[in-house]
Amino acid sequence: MSDPKSETTPAYPSQPMPQPQQPAYVYTAPISPVQVRDPYRSELYALCAQGRHSPTTTFGLCGILTCIFCFPCGLICLCLDSDRVCSRCGVRL
Image (cartoon, rainbow, N blue to C red; front, side, top):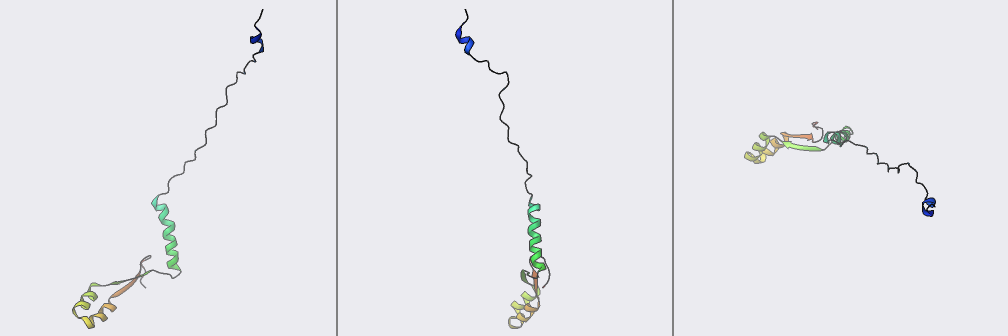
């Protein structure tokens, strides 16, 4: 006689369990400082191209020394020896 429990147990399929899919990893290369700097530099040059320079005044050594040693008249020499340059693009203004 057969055992009633063995007749009622269902047979399991021989298919393997599906494995969960691993997420695809997309590698993005890090941005180098050169790639960051180029758009920033082009934006600044665009401002200079529009005429919105960032002027910086520099004084020459001769004008500074003349201003110190010949005080009242040396101020004129200091103003004549000054140079206005854009700090972004280097153009003399």
